[in-house]
Image (cartoon, rainbow, N blue to C red):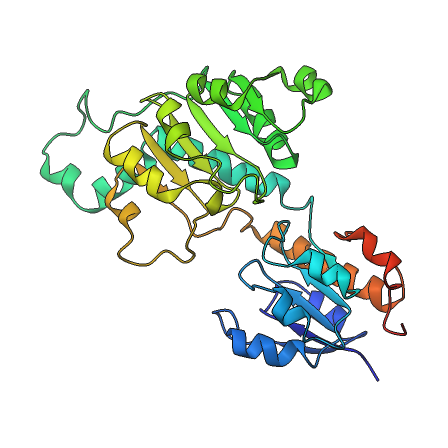
Length: 336
């Protein structure tokens, strides 16, 4: 009898078909995530679970999952899963690193260019008919933005995605500053990047791009104090996690014009409610957590989820295991 697998959303590509060779697969068929009551019911009965960042898998769920042996996360980040609790119960946790790097870096650069040159605002200006009604085909003051070429880019978190963003910045002849938990001398040389304290980065950068995971240490890492340090002509870009930025402080910064604007792919509250204050600002670009939303990346993510689950079913350690110490608690596979 095949082990039971519950997947909390339909995945692109052929991953699910491959998994059916090893598992009795059930896929949540609806676009919104399964309610907590459904997760609680399913997790008690299944041997394996495939999750998204929007699925909160806390210890209260994990401790009531007697058969569960593996949680395969369809994302790089896994702050929605209580990994420590999973390890305690001998449950393997995997993620999908690497495949999102270039895609999220592309999205970051799309936001950098769009906010700096007022692309979204200009598109709306044309579509609303304001350009036509202005009776002016061209004007020296029409939709004036800021150059990106030759400016200073501040990267907060020089991991895979931060490095990919920095590589693209070289093509724009940008000065690159970075702040990270550890200095990375080899990358400094390769990228011509300079390590500086966070305070210095915020003061000197024309564009501040965030690429850190959400942890206790990085929660609200960018708050009122940090935003006040930025240039009035600087832009804040966040494609990491919403809660790294204190949203209330950002709204205050935008209202009082401490910074020139922001481009956000991630948000403290997802999805954003229709009455959210950020909608009021023309100098803010909002995308719906779509940094990895290319067919190529999303399909590769699904393939990694499948590889992890198949490896585990074969009694092997999954290739992108997060909690490596779990092997000391329980060997991989469903025979344990």
